[in-house]
Amino acid sequence: MSGDRLLAPIAIRCAALGGVVLLAALPVYVFVEAPWRPLVARLAVAFVLGVALLQLRSVVADHVAAAHRARVAPPRRPARPARPRTQPG
Image (cartoon, rainbow, N blue to C red; front, side, top):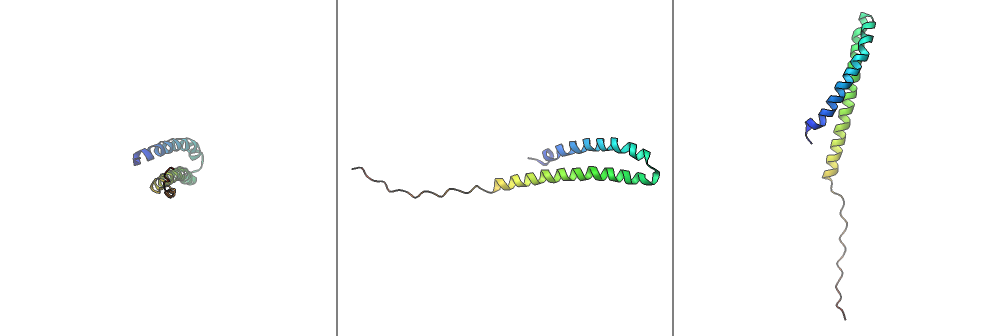
């Protein structure tokens, strides 16, 4: 699977989350006094970045685990010892 296919869903979810956080943080940003506005903006950005990094970590961990499982061959069954053929009669 290419990197673009891995990152596209994360980018879409993070963009949607960023829009929701922007809609939630904008009234707070306007309401608080001027010295507190940078803190509100930083908290909003930190939240979106934290969620994005957790999602990215989850996808990368799943991808690495799947690659490891594919590389490690399942244990083979031991071969049965050959039985000597008996001749009829």
